[in-house]
Image (cartoon, rainbow, N blue to C red):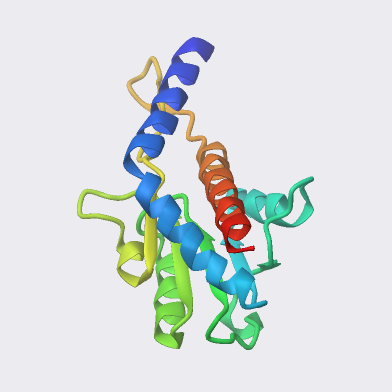
Length: 176
């Protein structure tokens, strides 16, 4: 089972590398605007994807200008137009994630959204300045009863997070 999981996960990473390189670069460029102008990048992820926020804030290589993005709108900061949001979603059409993306769009806040695209694209992508497809649409492993399991949304999101982080660092080094 571990070999199948590893093969499937490697396939997801390869599809991201091949298909999402330009959106990752575009997303890093949008986020660089906040860093260069001394503004904030608010990082959002709920449930298991709150792990992204921990990585951004407390890892040995924290994300530049990162701050936590509250899930409840009444707790949101007073955004400035140069602030950006980096949003991670594990499902393409989660109603609360969609509402947050819509409200950020209405406020004119730059949004880089990471989510799997559905059959008709990712609804959250309609409100994002840049959308990165996580390629993780269903669990990776087949069960004996025909169901599937093994949905590593945090692992896949961390891969994209690090790709954004590395690209952002390259952009910032070029800027200096």
